[in-house]
Length: 219
Figure (tube, rainbow, N blue to C red):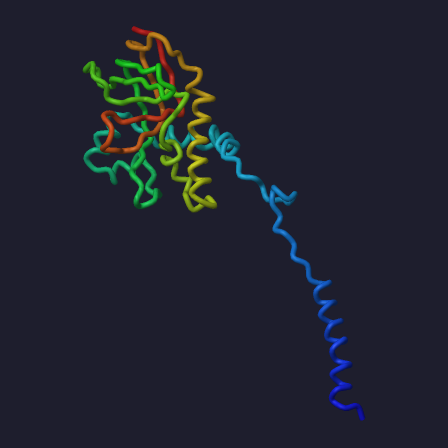
């Protein structure tokens, strides 16, 4: 009968062989991604905005927006009520209200020397500016993104992607709309804008980001 040492000498090579088989049969495979040739799509905020602009963004703003005097009066008196009617009630709780708005009136001032160019628009005919409209090419803020109730932060992987998506709206608006606007002798011309603005106490005039904009001839 084999003694204990014999059994141990037989068991060691057998266990070692089994371990070798286990290591050979088990492989760690990388998760498929765009970088390693997998099928996961790369994040492309510019393409995402382009895909929804005409189909969803413009129709939403046209349906949700109100005339600037009405929107701003309600926003000043009751932001939550204005948000429910003209804004995005699904916004993050700690975010300011953003409203869809139509601005129509006369340009009383223009700043086209800066890349963040703007026009000041008088909407009630008193000769004073009521709203400031961004005409690019540099556009500040994320008002267009934030006004849409079908865009939610939780749909994105992280804060960086969400921020890039917001900037992509501004880039597309400049490419399709703002870059085609005239830049010379704007004071006295008419302006018609569909866009959005964020309620903020830190600015002289509401800053509107256009999704559609027209600058007409002087009367």
